[in-house]
Length: 224
Length: 256
Image (cartoon, rainbow over the protein chains, first blue to last red):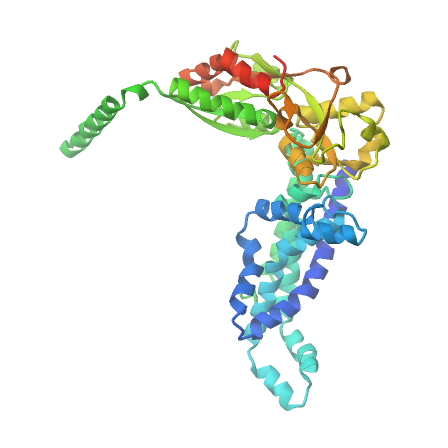
């Protein structure tokens, strides 16, 4: 295997890990709110979160390219802060992946929170636990399987990301050239040998991840 | 049995009467075309004229030459192929994948350094030498001939290694253009045909890379094996060799 392939593997793992951590932090409050609220905004917000499930990555990539570019809203902000534009950068990929993988993290956690029902929290409240205390010592442990599913799906989905990265990454080795893009390049350049090594590795990795997900004891769908 | 026969004859009659109703479409055929991304605009313009003049119908797909080659070798249904180079068609010819003797040069491509900002380049390469920018967009040199030509030109200018860290790569020349046109890259190498119409640059600013900095980009076309018996395929190729198409091709800054 070429050394630049190794750097693509490392970059991909780094990206997926960082995105997973960020998504658990961002996704948890969103999931909590979605599972508890009776607001009329529940529908619209839930739909926005789920958009990346159905949108072609090219749509997301195209708008992120405009959004992050020097004439886009985010581009103007990052330039004003002296960070330059975020397209073609690792930070840009992280932000794009957070959008892209959001539903894969929010939905399992939301399902877990919903499956739990109101009862455990009512009991905690009757024992004089503050809402914050009840959330951390009752709700989070009860929803643990949902978090595990969310983390695995978020990680795996980011590893498999292609279209968005292709649109905003610029294919820079060591910076934005992730595994999926590199495989694409090898195939296009007809270097099938190297493509096979990486592609077969991806298949095995993805299978193991899903096995870990579906093979867990007592697995009954996404939420538990 | 009887009803089956009835259906067949009914169908036949329907087809016959349909062709009687539309006699001018009797010889109209469809042809499926694959073209290098840099030839997108002129080919679309030529297809409009061709369809009007002959009644044939053309379906065109655009992509990087290397990508299209892989698709062709793996059974893509293309009948005519407009490459961005001559090596790929020569390779297809050697592999026996084309209609014998159908290879010809339809255009000679011009490489241009382009920026979406007015006055940024103004016909000079000084900006490249200064290197006062963050991103230089090129097409993937492994699969796109204009990307390879850009690498060649930078090598001859002695700037390749200093500028390499600033490279952003599009999968094909269209994506390289898109990075620049959206302002995400300040400048980059694209095909003149993408930014040129009727004798002038259509927007932004440009430096036309002198021809002695890279091997001429001879763009060859072939009729592929699948298009061998299709009259619309040979009609399209003949049309490309004609004066009407030549005028369009030249208007986009290609040599002939």
